Length: 159
Image (cartoon, rainbow, N blue to C red; front, side, top):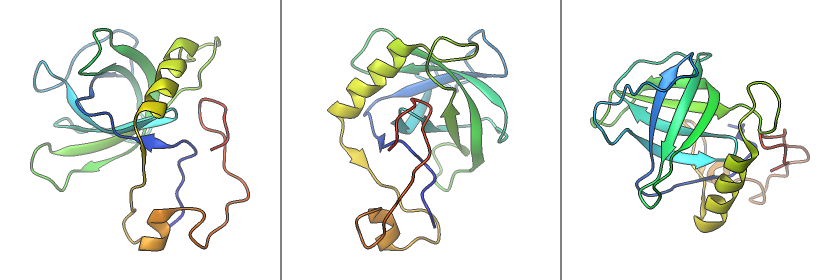
């Protein structure tokens, strides 16, 4: 199965997210004060666990927090996939694609892109196997596969 993400994903230990569906004001739906655990993060999006059912296509406002930082990061995006979580800790898992970064309407601030870029340099990239994928697929391009073109991620870079 072909990887559709254009940006590298990485894991930031202790990262959490609080969110609101379809609005620009923050309202925490998390089951605790700590927020929902972030599974992986990149300049193009993130995935997280939640106990609330979410639908693909919904607009979402995120407040991303890190254990080693006092200031959370605010982001806008849309849910690109959501479904049951196989683990017992949280009922659901959701994936979010961030809105583009820039100065336009509904764009995420460029300062946030810089912060994500710094995190990407700090934490190593991770590759996640997809359901039905092979070990070769999980290793990505360079393992017998060649990618001639990858789409732009929301940060505007080619991966």
